[in-house]
Length: 454
Image 1 (cartoon, rainbow, N blue to C red):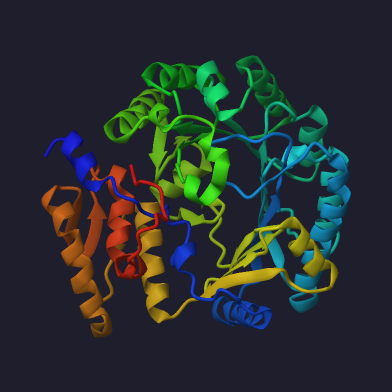
Image 2 (cartoon, rainbow, N blue to C red):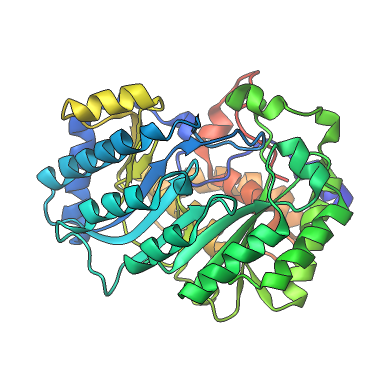
């Protein structure tokens, strides 16, 4: 079957699988803090490790990018910085009061726009986090997301002094028509300036985030963007597919006519063109939507199958616990998921009352944990070994029945009790994961939930 027919056949709505179960199917709409805390205790008992990946959500942006699906607060009022940092530090104190032996092995500043904050405020945040003996500076990996337009030498130097060596610059696309459609303006000259400054300061892992499938984007635009990107030679490149979900994100994604969006085969061709250009220049395709130079730790982790994936994306650090601080931040104790309140006011009020700001989550049962492992293996390694325990026989029968079309189309192989995604099937890895997903096949609704898989 040719690629055109495959894309038409498998381009259905489906999750990106940063978790399983996926957020729309979490079964605790009012998760209690006690249940969440007990799940952390279960984690510590099971894994005998206090290592934690810490994600900090810094939600403020000065302007709205219409492609964005993040939880953010648009404001030019920088007076919000100080009270928000105060609240983050109080939230971390709540966790340390319960679990004083937690050790930060991985920390990521995300957003929103982390570089919305003054370097002095980020310094205050990190001083508060690191000043309590909860960081092993020899082992920790630190990274942050940055907007090229407002990232200063002071930002880069301040974070470098704390041990940050990874920075991800949000680029999206260099074409002026695309930038106008998504309300995200930045010149190549500005990106080059801040990229080279980061390299000069000593950052050893610089990533550029690009997006394909944007409004008014075509082959010429994506080729131009990749050629510009290759001029700067970032260590890593994230090439995300634009998720068009205006029913979730409201009017922000209605800033253009839907006829301006590349669809189906046209959208996939943008990815394939970019992929070919990157691979020809020595980059390795990693998992879904990621590329890295061969000597980059991410590429090495993919090759030796130590790659891990969580709500922060692909990572070389495989901790079994992730704690999210900040408005809307998601946490993962392996045995449970929790999410903080999505509004700044409610989140702040709870933390300032001395309460965790959790408002929903999910407690994973034995079947959830098994399916989670399969989906994680598929997303990271493109293969997963089926359990031989008899209790899962009926579930696997359903999974294999759903995989039959993909096996017939040579997108998936079943060998020695192992499900393997073929090279041709990597574009459809989300569809393969959906075969294992119990929730999505039980769900019946006329309302859309997920973006298209292609």
